[in-house]
View 1 (cartoon, each protein chain N blue to C red):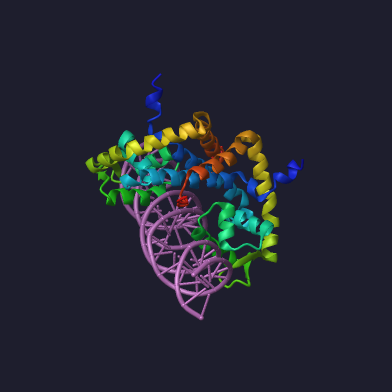
View 2 (view 1 turned 90 degrees about the vertical axis):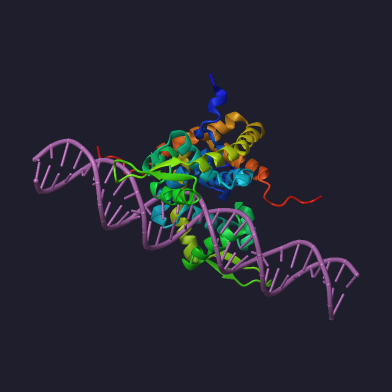
Length: 152
Length: 152
DNA sequence: AAATGATACGTGTATATACACGTGTCCATA
DNA sequence: TATGGACACGTGTATATACACGTATCATTT
């Protein structure tokens, strides 16, 4: 069997496959969350601010392994929608975000749809396989240096 | 152990984890391919057109499990860069793309970096785990209906 | 030949994502 | 006290992604 050849087929790119998986699973969650008006990305931000807030942009970026500048604009959407708000902080540099009452209600509305999808996937794909993704993400984040490794 | 509680922690969303993995692995591949001037997404399109072309937009979309309209603009970039070109087709509706000589050279330049990354990840993450991603993607694509399931 | 369903395409709009860059503030130390 | 590094932020720019819509062409069936 020409395994060597297989490994070079265009369909064998690990990165492309993870991206394919991400697109597909995003579609599943977005459709499930549709009644709440939230995308899964927004649900994720909101849920984390709810659970761990108040949080500033940089802290949330670390929490979500997202680029900070990505969050600047994503958070703007949540703020415009009145789901989070900007609490005044002693340090004038930072913007501390907390969830609003409307945000809490929206999360509460979305939660059952999210849970249902989590359960559905657990059954259809297996908890083990799904747990592996979490580990994989962490390992990959470790491998993706990106952060200008310290000189010493 | 309150497993039930864990499953509700904000960090336990399968979708968010897959997306985290996708971001991280994309960074790894994009950095590796940087000398070629290609992003991994572009490399993927180009490689597939090279291997299976001529292809029209819809066919490539199916091949990559990508929305067709996404490709319209992504392909425009490759075309502007002179990496692919638009072959005239008997059917005036479709645009058949083929790789150009410049495109072939670019792929050839990028390939070693891609292969090196594939190998590196195989070693550090394990071929089995990586193969699982491909399966996972396929299963998820099956679960994500999206395609207005046929009435009968 | 006319009608119709399927096929192929592109655009408007919105979100997600990251990088390069520049600004302001805090704090520790010279 | 002055200053330089660390920290927090936002914007410009570019790419990736999808959905809703509308248009043109093909092919098949009246």
